[in-house]
Length: 226
Ligand SMILES: [Zn+2]
Image (tube, rainbow, N blue to C red; front, side, top):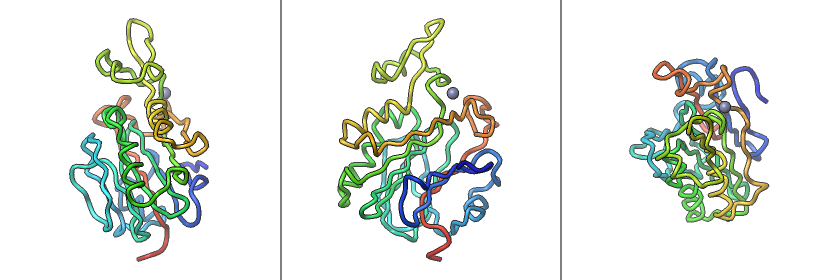
């Protein structure tokens, strides 16, 4: 990891579950990217992504309205979402195979979408100790400038004041804090150190605005269950 076009996170998963994220260099459409990676495009389950804190438990592929995260235990389903600076959060219960994929920008982070996902997993028989969480590449604490109103919503340890009274927020740290409060153990929280804003190979809305592409994340079983 990583290859030129994709980040691989399989090392935190187990068995045949695969977690990947495309970079800017990838084929452009989600379906093409999925197939290029070895996922069945008919198996994709995709949240609409409205910067909500809603997470759904699903048992079929397709698109899902009014949510930013999906949980499933169905091996036929490949969870997918798209980001450009927001965090893709991969969740995996190594004991029972339940898994989730969540889109978290600052609204989702502050609203606690990561914990909503954990709670939903626990409601479906997960034990917190068994849940591995990966916070994928996103805009980093040195690059994510926010106004005072947004800064005030972050924990004081997750935001710093820079020059000219500008604030910089740490999305990863805020989610980590929430996960620790939710009894996810330190060893089970994995954080990518890749910044989408600084890394030209990544898609960044802050850097490229409306012209920014999107990075696709996938979590599921490859080459099977057609
Ligand atoms: Zn950065």
